[in-house]
Length: 399
Image 1: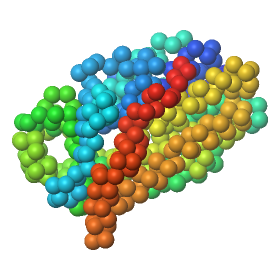
Image 2: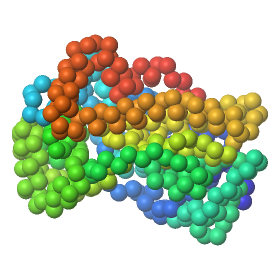
Image 3: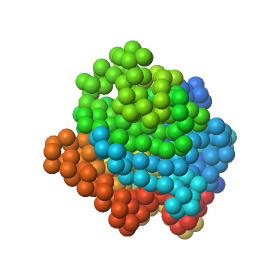
């Protein structure tokens, strides 16, 4: 079977990329190992995604944002970063820049469903589910993909969006820099007595990190980052003890807190592929870059990456060039590397500093927070990196 583009992985990045190609006339096939039922109705997995203003613009251009109900969208008006037991905090406020919000929280399963519902209506995109890739070969003229059902497919380009532990990335001989933090993230939802006022908190306590992110109503998304052995204890705590633990660690800011969901653990490993392309093959989403969640750039980078690659392909079509040729892939590689590399290493540096409990690190943390809060150029740069507000005016959609 001959396709124009084969996308491996029908997660949020892969589906967004398929939607970006809707008007190209290209024949696109998606390969997904999960059953179709999971794509149609993805289950809640505890993860709430903080979308930047640029990501919202991209999702609007793809027709995805309008598929998400207002009750599933939670604006972040303020964000505060706290260090240890100190009352001092680094503060970001949306009103300072006259914007509606710093970002927006939407559940991962809600985004996935909206993407699938949109892509499933597109005539030039086919989704083959419950199948995995067993082999992958490319040369100067075509790519060949072998599937677990015995089928072989050929295309001009293969795009992998198959997780930060991408099997096809390894098949293609692309190495990746992996940083295992030796920690596990536990995510859940909790209700609380007092209103959160749409303020997000990132509390770098000694030994663990607690993020409390505002959702609709008096509910918040809770993100706990702790050593894996501590996480095992957290997961086994009875609900009442867990509730009290979080309530006390958050210093009763929201009053009484209660679990309203299961607790979901995720091992914390950051990944950055050494390169994003090779012959007729490209990486997008977490297969290209899997981020630590502290700066909330994971899916935002995935959206920007697929957008860049899709626009490069559209430009090649206009110029009647090879959509899987080296010029298209080199352009994507250069631009996405320029965006992701400093963010990846910068985020890892921040995490290493704010999870280091040695005395010199603790002192440096306090200096960094005060410098970031009081030196306006630094604070502006941090805010723009986190919210991508300025890029909403600069980035052409090209959709």
